[in-house]
Image (cartoon, rainbow, N blue to C red; front, side):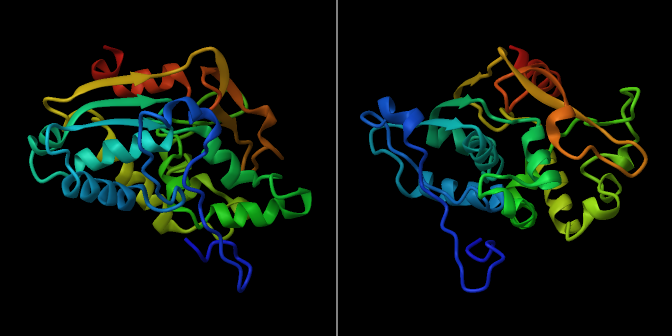
Length: 252
């Protein structure tokens, strides 16, 4: 990940924690830093190692994962050696705004880049994003690419397939990244299935508009993400799509 600036001799270090939203929690919780660009399964393995090596002598862990952090926790549970192990390490799990079914915000930066680094660097931001496994692993799991009439396109033209990235949109897109996304989504589809004995809670917002589909006309996507269709969610995670994907385990 330190090489993903795409500029020779320049390295990028991921920050450990976005402090502002969590200031009130820092007095009674410990942050667990990880590089949010890397493969989520790799970070999940690091988390599982940490839970095993530092298990409280008088009890079990309580874990809170926000956004991608929730995916890291779910993936860590899937990496355990037995169905019982995660429950032996962890007492409670709270997932806050976790994109369990993916998020169109990942699509947005891979398709169109970002102006957060300045307008002249939009394309560079897009190039960077295409080297980050985690972004691909958070691509939407649902049929997010639709035709001009709003009908979902076939699976081979969706975002988890190379056919979903035609022409210039697929320049420098790596098939390995899409395969990682498919494998990861299979891994976490039953998010609580390996959390026996763990008290679980998933908190999802449903009051802000969140993108759910993008229209493709022939081999063309729109010039930016402003025309994407929206549903209610937390602006990043769509509520209904996530509930429908998760089934009874999430609805309850």
